[in-house]
Image (tube, rainbow, N blue to C red; front, top):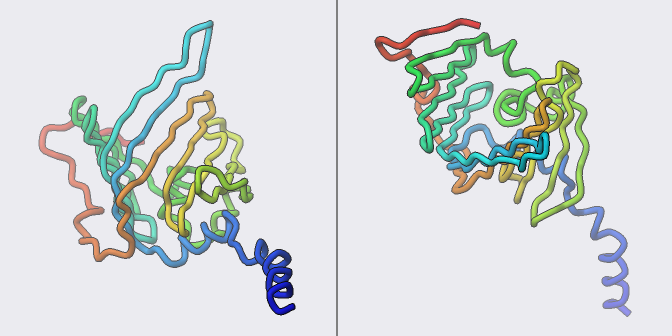
Length: 210
């Protein structure tokens, strides 16, 4: 009888005890204040005029520190650096010998970066995104984030989490291009040096302001 009762309780109450994607995202945002990881990004262009979709693969490293600081370093196939220092968003294209700087407040509101490092919790994210849990897939819990701004730059972002830690970002932009970023070797709550989120344009580069 006790076993039957215990089985009944697990069947009825067990699914309610499992965190959904939104709960896992909330946990990630509240408990992970900094992190470092490697990433691989695959960008797939939409099929047009009978031409097959094209894919481009890149890889590098990623670090973030809440609130609002992060660093993407693309190492292959082309070297690029993206740094947000809390005030300014810097983009350094090494091959072009060019740096672009933008106001971080204007640049990051409805972008995937807000999901990673800018917003402190789900309530803050909901100012810019409509959020909903998506079905579990590939051993991950998923959240669908749709930007409220209708400027056409971004259609949606799917966030995949494993054990309340970031695993995958799937980004669909306004042109139908899909980017899938997979994170590996994530280390949470590290003591990252302030220099990780500082950027000084190298001597001789062209600096553009937007």
